[in-house]
Length: 258
Image 1 (cartoon, rainbow, N blue to C red):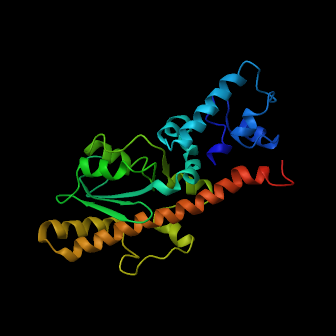
Image 2 (tube, rainbow, N blue to C red):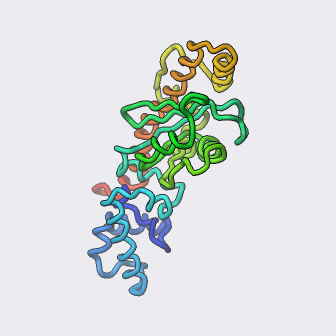
Image 3 (spheres, rainbow, N blue to C red):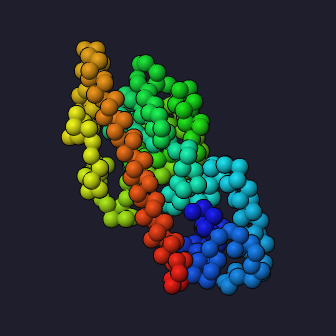
């Protein structure tokens, strides 16, 4: 989707981007190979060509950080298609809701393997940086106001400057509101019965049992709960990306459209 995107150019918003698509300018190559484009001045065209050429170089190099600063935050879901092989699906557990409530667990699913970092065992800034250093994009649910600010408060410098997709906002755009588990049920995504009806309050309770009594089964259940959160983010990300791409771009550019 990135090579179809022009909103990373200064002076191009979503309305003008749609105009470009409707006029047959669907890709960066289309733009670069067209000498005169309606509503793009001859003075601005060379600058935009240069910016698109640079974007193409950075995409070819796999440099997602370039798009973290050039693509508007609301549209960073577009990066999911190009960087799908190196996504960090992240979710944290804490003892409360403030940025100073201690993080008890950070779960990161890379699409194949689940990484679980536990307070007092292996959770620290170094371990977070090591895992996230291989990611090109981070996906969360409500992470813009919760997960990532809390991590940055307690483990400064752990979160790399790469695109971030907050699925709470993305799902709202396609008509799904509510919490993560509510949306999962709307879409027919089932959890393991052991954690199907668990809540954040249950997660805090399980941590307290582990912390005060050392009961391993409590930590194991909390770990399973957190892992379900992370793994289901992948399914929601793939679903929302396909739906937004179709509604944003494909409906304008498919035969008979535009």
